[in-house]
Image (cartoon, rainbow, N blue to C red):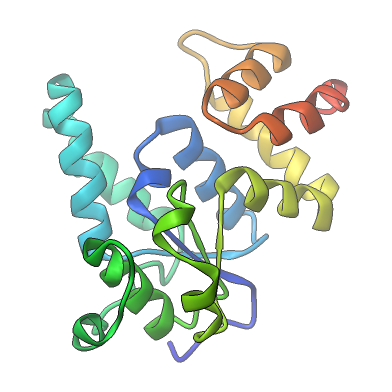
Length: 191
């Protein structure tokens, strides 16, 4: 695919690692609010960390990875490696993410590590680095009813144990999304 007519975001490993954040971001993409993309290398990074921190997940990691990749059509960016060595970022280990964003025609990189993607560098490629809290808030503001419906579905999937809207909002806040949590608190009856 040469590009997407929808807003496209590369999801960094640090936003795919946390279960709830991954679920929210992939659900927003599956609902058509934006086009989510990542690479096999990004997948390897977050899944290796997940298995290292949660060895009990190891037997299920291949199934989880398959579900993640099936959640969003055309999610995997390929053939970006040629660009890595020509890029300059504060952390050289993050160059593959920027390379994927360039080749994948991304408008932004959603990452918790904004310092690793300085605005001055990103502007050269017309790509913005966004914290997941800002990114999700943008979805809530651009398509409020559709985005709130996504949160309603995310809550409905949490059955073991089930959670109330208020409990989901508390989990959202604990996952480093304070703006999103505040926004949802004002609309708790809709989720």
